[in-house]
Length: 267
Length: 222
Image (cartoon, rainbow over all chains, first blue to last red; front, side, top):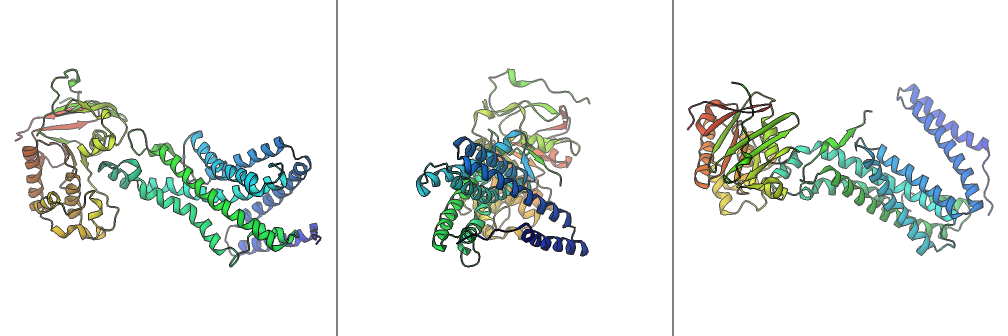
């Protein structure tokens, strides 16, 4: 089956819908129209650019090109996780921790999938490696960012409680245990829910894309199942790593809660 | 009286019994130095915001500080932090409760004889463990919080306004209990209060906390 190529006019029609929404937002004083238009424009430009980059990448399929592309994606994802926290660790540590958690959650899982599950040869074939990594980074990012942001916020809000528990002689792990578990749950629940809803409520984007692109539904479904497992595992381990690393930074060697390590971002 | 730091007692290592504050300083406060013998109760007073609570928190080692505290000659830094905080127990002015009912806050539960003993002495019913935290009055919180810390059998009690929410009768009860602990168990007590009468009743010595040190006040203490 031949994919129907979309013309600029088709895309323009779709963009008109967003412009219509922006106009409505302006009329009812929602104040979102500017952000809508900027985000819409950004999305279009970024995707067009990446389309061209991918075209070059697919044509060359050099290991170094793939690796540098992957590194750029990782660094941006790490930044995105870091930037989404309202109270973040001061200095480079915060960024390193975010990036480190994304490395664990996405890089290792993608590598594992490429070498042992998909088994494409060579393993870095960009047609597989880049979309897989992109899917994983995009999805695990949400979980890790959600959990990290919640951890620093909760520890800040409940600092009197944590300190009370320390004063009663609890170790830092026990004193912050409830909060840390709660944050891990927050990070993991969305992916668990979307696994439960997949296919019934939602047709995941990647699968839809593959079907539109002409793959048989069964093949598309199998890839989607693989991706879902990978995302769930990646998010889970990424969240665990991020929570552990951040909370280690917020308690010092004498097991004191040191919140002056956090800087607040003004909105 | 001028606020001058007391001479550091840290040189004299033989007199090791009791609690010793050695040049304890934090933020822009200190250094504070003080020698307290087993069974002594020290009253701490001073204007609001001078750092009395912070001083207790530094002794409990929950804020970073310079200098050190020694208990019977062993430095705080030589203890594992949780062990130190169980031994040198700070009872904060506004206690925190994070479970729904009272008893899960007690590491060993509330059925032990020791705990029931404290509850009775504090004039609290023995079924207080089942009470919902949201329904506690401030006075009940204050007494329960004291029991909770006492269950760690501390050697040193750091009390921050421990009777601020109690009526006159209950103040007497709690004062009696603390005096009893100091005397019978040789527990050391650092008592922060704005109520001078109370400190005169309770303390062996009273110090005014200044930003740069402790000043002993001359009072007719017990």
